Figure 1 (cartoon, rainbow, N blue to C red):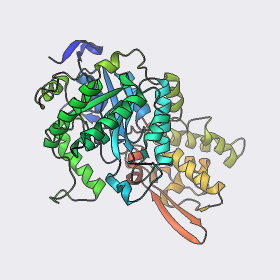
Figure 2 (cartoon, rainbow, N blue to C red; figure 1 turned 60 degrees about the vertical axis):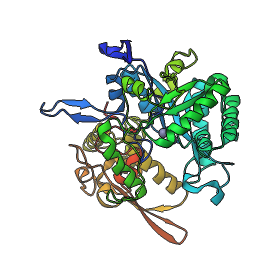
Figure 3 (cartoon, helix red, strand yellow; figure 1 turned 30 degrees about the horizontal axis):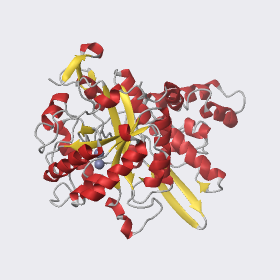
Length: 466
Ligand SMILES: [Zn+2]
Ligand SMILES: [Zn+2]
């Protein structure tokens, strides 16, 4: 059995920890929503969370990592949801590593598929801060198709982190795949030296891919030679096995291909879901010779005393952004700016009503992002319109300075912009004019869906129902 002891609510504790897990924040690549509320069939209005964290809790995992591709977008929500479910959150990211310098951007740097992958996990607060720096610099300095770090950056910010050697697309795996075991040893040795012998694990995966079994044999040999711990993972991209087709559709959206296209890019097997501890145990029973039956997974990592999680204070600070539109925030300050020191009761009442809808639907972050870029445009002298279409019906938008049309004075309805009963998400349309050229841009829920606009569920990086 893959379980040991009992966890919260009496759920059996699984003797395995997933350390390579993608969520919806692996943009157009991960189909696992952290939280997903669904109606329970045949039980009236009863709802159930069928998202990633709830599934992990159901499977009895005592801890869970989040390793989205090149970013930490989901880290805070992940942390909070794990805490609520009694799961120890391990924050991480599957970073993209440039083949040379992160500053180089040419054909030799591999284009879209040039960067390799490395699974990086946070051990303590220093590591959390370092991972934030790595991810930020990957976007600011290393962006070439993907946000990329390089060896120089990794060495500068290695403290407090633990690295798994990575999937088939990692540096070591690619070198093993190319038959260059000496180079792979050199690369693994570099990581081991930089991150420390205790904090560089050789990662093995088994998704039923032939090439993977071949590479695993090499990885195990290297682990033995270097004295590096082995760690078995499953590259989880969706929650349940049955979601493989939906995930394929997501990849089609990413690549602009049709499901009917036989040559489309797709995952070659359907093993990329959050497997149970028992499934993981059986996965590693059938790999190539020499692979131990119970790779350590997260157990060793979890038991390390220095593996702490992000200080709650930081999370609380970050989550204070959520109710950013509530009383005391820019919305109400804007009310006084627009309507003077003592606005009419009807105006105050309407603002409170709109704020309650915005907050309830989890749109606070969405409003704040639009407020931020419109305010930036105005500060920079970039002409933006006074507000177009239904957005002019929002008093919140008017008070925030997003629009410049008084919806009260002109009798414009908020309900045209946002429907209190739920979706659809409000759509902003803005026009900006820069030197000589006019650009129209539409920020719609589809355009921003992956960065937190609420779609089917009002939980996103900035908006949560609870
Ligand atoms: Zn990968
Ligand atoms: Zn991955």
